[in-house]
Amino acid sequence: IFNITRERVRQIEAKALKKLRHPVRLRRLIPYRELLRR
Image 1: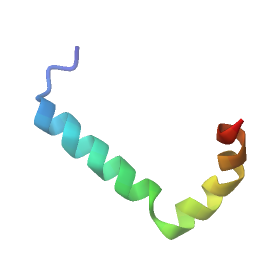
Image 2: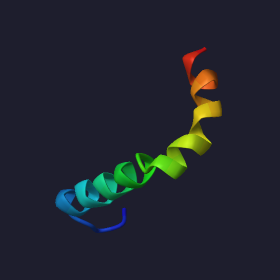
Image 3: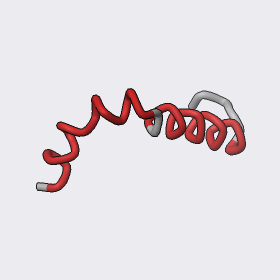
Image 4: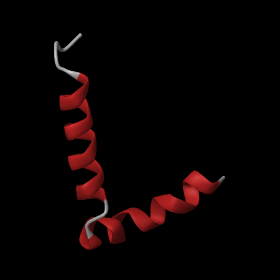
Protein backbone atom coordinates (compact mmCIF):
# COMPACT_ATOMS: atom_id res chain seq x y z
CA ILE A 1 0.00 0.00 0.00
CA PHE A 2 2.66 2.54 1.06
CA ASN A 3 5.46 0.91 -0.93
CA ILE A 4 7.90 0.61 2.01
CA THR A 5 10.06 -2.31 3.07
CA ARG A 6 9.44 -4.54 6.07
CA GLU A 7 12.63 -3.14 7.58
CA ARG A 8 11.26 0.41 7.35
CA VAL A 9 8.02 -0.72 9.00
CA ARG A 10 10.09 -2.29 11.79
CA GLN A 11 12.05 0.96 12.23
CA ILE A 12 8.88 3.06 12.43
CA GLU A 13 7.34 0.62 14.90
CA ALA A 14 10.47 0.63 17.10
CA LYS A 15 10.55 4.44 17.12
CA ALA A 16 6.87 4.64 18.07
CA LEU A 17 7.31 2.16 20.93
CA LYS A 18 10.36 4.06 22.18
CA LYS A 19 8.30 7.26 22.26
CA LEU A 20 5.47 5.53 24.13
CA ARG A 21 7.93 4.29 26.77
CA HIS A 22 9.14 7.85 27.50
CA PRO A 23 8.35 8.65 31.18
CA VAL A 24 6.31 11.78 30.45
CA ARG A 25 4.19 10.05 27.83
CA LEU A 26 3.89 6.97 30.02
CA ARG A 27 2.32 9.07 32.79
CA ARG A 28 -0.27 10.40 30.36
CA LEU A 29 -1.16 6.87 29.29
CA ILE A 30 -1.69 5.45 32.79
CA PRO A 31 -5.44 6.35 32.91
CA TYR A 32 -6.02 4.39 29.71
CA ARG A 33 -4.36 1.28 31.11
CA GLU A 34 -7.43 0.53 33.21
CA LEU A 35 -9.66 0.73 30.14
CA LEU A 36 -7.51 -1.83 28.35
CA ARG A 37 -7.69 -4.31 31.24
CA ARG A 38 -11.46 -4.66 30.91
